[in-house]
Length: 270
Image (cartoon, rainbow, N blue to C red; front, top):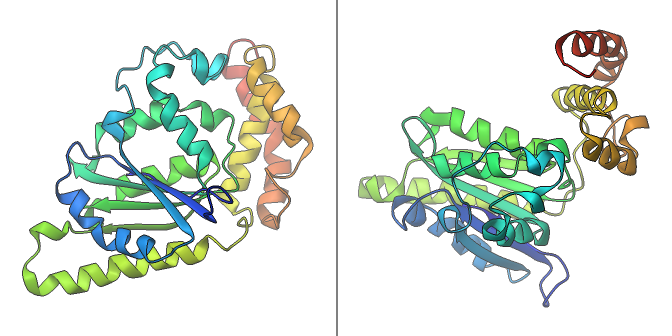
């Protein structure tokens, strides 16, 4: 499930779409009820709710046109344009997924695959995200993957949790889990007032790896190069002005020639 909150439009201050990685309005849909109640109690929030199965074409042709030219060149762009429009519309996003075979559902993975150009050209640094995996904390790998990918797109993931599905719980456990879900939702709403996070160690190193990749790959993927150059990132310390982990900053200077050398040895055209 994805939830978006738009800002300063239609009389609302924040916009959220709820997008679910489930294929039916079953256990995950019911588990989101406490979260919906918290959002509904905040009049400044506008919420849209979707099922990813209705917005993403699962098949991917592997043409990489979304990366080399732009998402609008994807063979299934017409079917997925509404989802991209909502990602651009929102101030915040909530992604919820049940667990199938120990991981997120395949439609969630398809969503990230079909919009992988956002890894190359991230643009959501003004937006927050919440991740909910409905099956409990034992399956945290699913939540980690969803959170990692959203951060690569630029989202600030302020809440990530795994909770049991409410319909399968015994009655005496329901109030406890419902309370936890409401507290997580309230924490997420409060996080909407926060600014951009500082550059953590891992994100700084990720930024430097991509900067080297984009610089060396100018001839291979000029779309990436032009985007990064237009953002001023090729000469910047991070995606946006912020406090950068000093050790990561020092390490990136040391690692840059090593990364450049390795990429030239490994990839054709570098």
